[in-house]
Figure 1 (tube, one colour):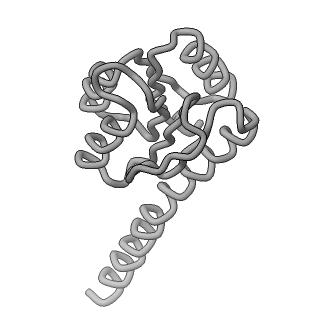
Figure 2: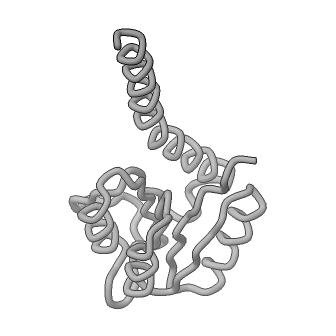
Figure 3: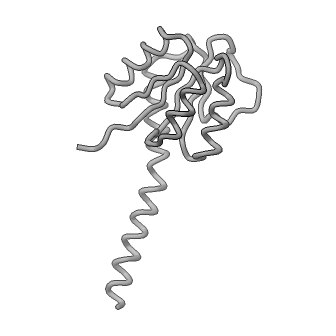
Length: 142
């Protein structure tokens, strides 16, 4: 059985956080739910997070700043930024995807998450396959 992918889900609105957590868990993901950017950074630093899904507008560390911090620690970690107040995000952001609340279907969010995780896994798998091929090549030469 392959290990579950872990999603760090962040929103200061407990209801939104709970709904996303349930939606993701029913699709087989492990979810770390945090209601602030500060708690999310602590959780991320403990390791094991495969993707970050965060609200934009939050007190303290907002979603954009959270993604900046996470990308500085782990540039390959995919991040999805969601906002209920902003329809188009015009500031510079390091998020891989920006979605406006109410403007997407849950199935669309799930598909984007799936694709981001596949894209993250892809190059690593290619490197592993090349390394194995080189090991086999060196073993036959020696």
